[in-house]
Image (cartoon, rainbow, N blue to C red; front, side):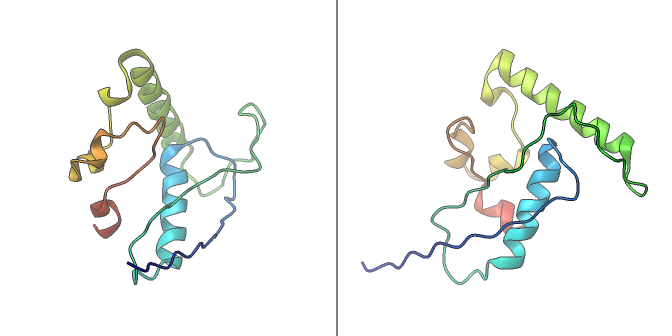
Length: 121
């Protein structure tokens, strides 16, 4: 079996700093969809954050953004983190993880994965 592996790197710079899971996932997924051509299966996919800032740094509010929604998403992430801290990682997961029986048993603390159906709708 002769397989070729190609490494491809792409990046996107967010307009504002964020620690909201949904905002990071949305940006990463859009970048992936815009650049992956679906010709070959994926062997490895990584997402990293750079240019990190402390969460107490003032951020200019977006005139057209929904600050109330952003605050709710931040609260949701804190709540999920607290539930996992108290009861373990598998106590709460995204529903998309249950689309794939193998991937649904991986702990994101050591592996961050999304099932095939997550990308194909």
